[in-house]
Image (cartoon, rainbow, N blue to C red):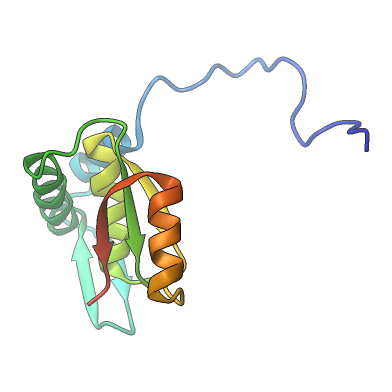
Length: 126
């Protein structure tokens, strides 16, 4: 099979951004601290940017305190919910790699994914 192109090819006149997701999150929090950042209807939860940032920063610090280091992989075995979002931003802020794992996996499938991906931590759904 020969590939003939891609959606984006060749040089671009737009430079790559020199920032991170964590820094953009901090910027948004500074700009919109009291505005709603997330609404989870099924969980009946609403967070402003500052409320979300407090939870994100707490979890990012917990990951670091647990001994995780920049570049380590952390799995998340959870359906879509606010905690998933918090984990996503927390791993980004801590410099960790988030490995998304199908929440429908059984324990033997989970064990396989954790071994194959080299996860050093795992976030679970309640």
